[in-house]
Length: 207
Image (tube, rainbow, N blue to C red; front, side, top):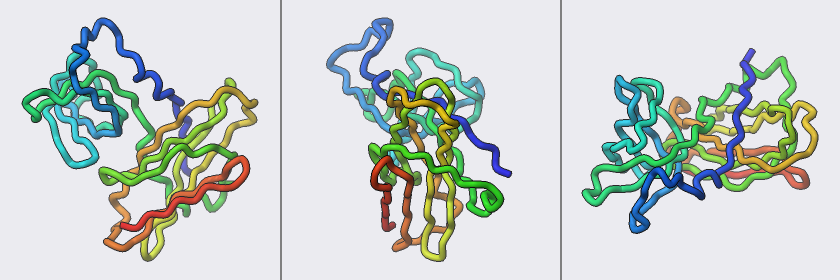
């Protein structure tokens, strides 16, 4: 039985302000996006790769410690330095980037699909990324992706159990689901679907 993952809902507007302690030059070129980070044996962020495959050695300005020798999928605010080979990480938000649960593991359970709103879904960097809007009052919601592998691609379904949480404020849930391991080939399709308040959502991509 798959363990239900309860995610921390974050608000992207956290990146709208930067602490004065950063002492940023307003002329610096700040980039915000989904990226992959690598840490060294001391837990320092050492390498950043954007979803276009560009890698930068990292000058971690605030010295934030992460788990050692780990690959992290995050939303990051960073600066590409003038040498174009190094970057300075300013802020990060961890996102849900677990491998999707195989649909076979859900045979003996109800697949909850409480309605959500979808802000965006796209493929990049070897991931299916999604920004999902959820109404949250006080009870943690349970969300994860379910994968149904097909001969010519893979279908993803959003599991969402609001656990009887009353209607509250809108929060953003960030997903970045790895696509490796599905033996996908050029021309294969990737779909994503979930329940909405009115019409349901369905996205389809061709590799």
